[in-house]
Figure 1 (cartoon, rainbow, N blue to C red):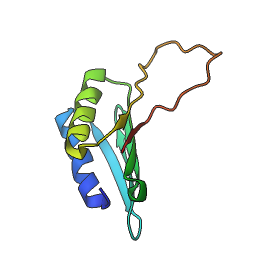
Figure 2 (figure 1 turned 90 degrees about the horizontal axis):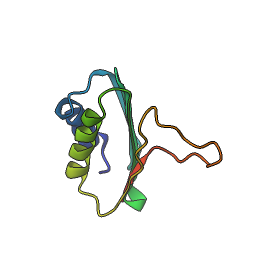
Figure 3 (figure 1 turned 90 degrees about the vertical axis):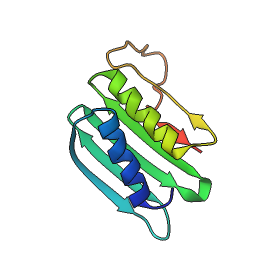
Length: 111
């Protein structure tokens, strides 16, 4: 996925499939390749950054709404990107985190 148009179509459709509430969005195409985008949701946001030279996309899908909706949107994105590998971290909102542990990023990387 090197072009913002391709990713924009997937992200926008995932919002509809997950029944999330879009407020606004912005996508940027790097030249010659690579793209970034962010969608502001009533529930929070979806953002992504690509590194085509590494075959990688970092995705953050963050909601304070129904977690099942976020899961549905994420599964749609994963299905459409069809990655060879996924590094996935899921944090439940409102869950307690020990202060003695270093925080982990709440992002997904597709390779």
